[in-house]
Length: 220
Image (tube, rainbow, N blue to C red; front, top):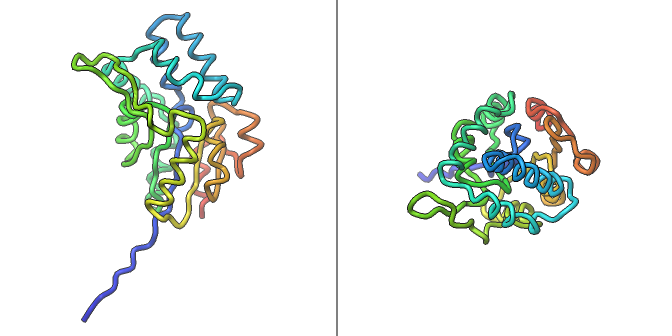
């Protein structure tokens, strides 16, 4: 006798990290360690990119060269992500997983900094930008081929996830212009406004929320 087991295709929910799963912008916290002048410059670049005023490609390498974060500093930002985690994130992700959703972090942030938060939230997959360090833990560049480091990278990631996993449904959640780019690649794009309410994201999103705790009701 032969038994045929049917494995249902996954349902994916892709979360941005900075200003979505956590209140902070990781690159800004790295810049803060370099003094107020560096912090102000990086904060403005980050804000302009998230508002869609400048392309991510134009500032990605520049910000990192100004800061040159060490391995230890990236790990420190990881702890800040946890300290400032969105207050409903852990319960929401647990509820979504129980309902058959697979969470993925899709971020233009840095893999090593995001890993502690992902572990804290029980998220196994991260699509972000790996940093490179030398034997002493000093900055040695980043993985320039990582899609999330450039404009149009997040839609590319979503398309790759769809091709790889053949999900029944893909939902994306985020606060910035790079997140909004995925709107036409997913079944539902949810704009997020707890920490930064951006007019273009609010207008362009299929739905808009200010707490991750609102998500499960949207997905039933």
